[in-house]
Image 1: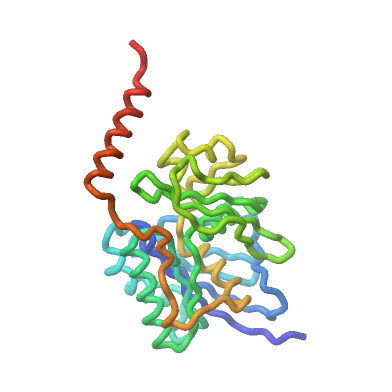
Image 2: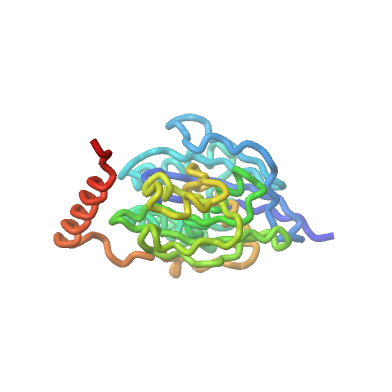
Length: 285
């Protein structure tokens, strides 16, 4: 009989305007790398400040999480939220087995915040770091919300009239995701669509509407499957069990985009294109 072990995984995500923290406790026999997902309602994704941390239970794992709308001040809220989460769970930081973080793509400042905090804590604790792509986290969240989902195209608004996107397929036999197309940055109409029924996750549909062909092609559109520490924790547990970790000094954001802002000429061109689209959409009087 395989020995029972306890895993405590801290997960962080500040890739958006939310400060998101999750704490996963799993007692397992190490016989499988799969995390079973039960068909239960996922708790409200947004946590009110000072409220008790919601919990999510799946298989042998329990997850406490906080997901607060903090805007541009996630960096000031992240460490206090971590401390509160450990208090809610009755655990200590020293109990951590590993630290997972939303590696990106997303807000440049937010990605650096999560990476830096994960590195600092991991160095102090002597534990490994588990980078989890935010696009994969969206796919994981779509599956949490609808366990029958196995193919997910994630599309996130990247600003500057572009989309961060990736294509994933969940293999129930392996209990893990396969990357069909890795994280990319393209115009809304340039995404390569799956040739099988798929769920569209992320805020791309809300940001671009019909300009994103994936909206019309998708079997299901999940607007609420967004970057969140809860799916980062669950995907991070599978990665930890599979050995997909890095030492703290090698943890790094996955920016995907290497350009922070448009030039003046590019902004003027984008504004002109937007104005032209607006005129085309004006009703005939």
